[in-house]
Structure formats: C-alpha cells, structure tokens
Amino acid sequence: MSQRILVIEDQEDNRQILRDLLTSAGFEVIEAADGEAGLAAAAKCRPDLILMDIQLPVLDGYEATRRLKADAALRAIPVIAVTSHSLSGDADKARAAGCDAYISKPYSPRQLLAKVREYLSPIAPTT
Image 1 (cartoon, one colour):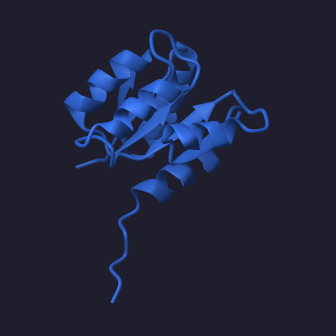
Image 2: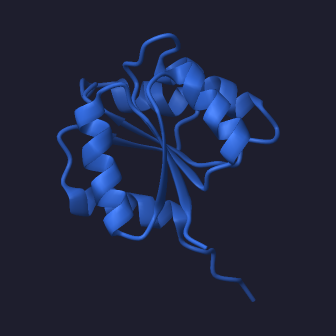
C-alpha cells in the first residue's frame, strides 16, 4: 500500500505540480484547497504526511497546523510547510505553529522529495 500525502494548497497549479511529482514517486495524494478542508481531510483519511501551504483561505496554514497538533489522533502526522513565505523568521514561525519542517517556494523537486522521504522513512530499530 502506498503512503498517503495530504496536500493543503489553495492554488490549483501548485496542487497539480505536487500531485504529478508525488504520484510519479509512488505516493497517493489527497488534496484540500483551504485549511478547514485540510483539517477535515486529515481527520477522515489519516495521511502519513501533510504538505501545508501557509497562505490559505478560510483557515491559514499556521492555525490549521496548530489545530492538527492539538488533536491527539492527528498530532503524530508530520507537517511540512511548503510556502512562498520565505522572510527571515518565517521558518521559525512555522515551527512554532507545529510544522515539523519548512520548504520555501520555489523549491527543487529533488529537495521536496528528499524532505518527504526523510519524514516517511521507517525508523531503524535501535539495539
């Protein structure tokens, strides 16, 4: 069974780019166009990872991430902020909201896939 990634992104073009990239890498992609729809999709589908835009309608990515991390059933899902907010301090703000990682747009497809795989790789058992 392929791993599921929830893409929460309001721009259709950006969702298409991520959908093509992730499905070609063997991932199943679920999509939401705003933060509120993203929360509902996360609760329903229980993805393995979430790619979260920050500038979203209805509920921004910071607040959507805070709500995800406040939910005991969803808090373990890694959230990677993928955003054009790349000013000094934006990565810290995303982490403070609960994002596990931060990638600024534009990103290289290789960089994004490496970060996704980093969070989806099985943890090697320690002896």
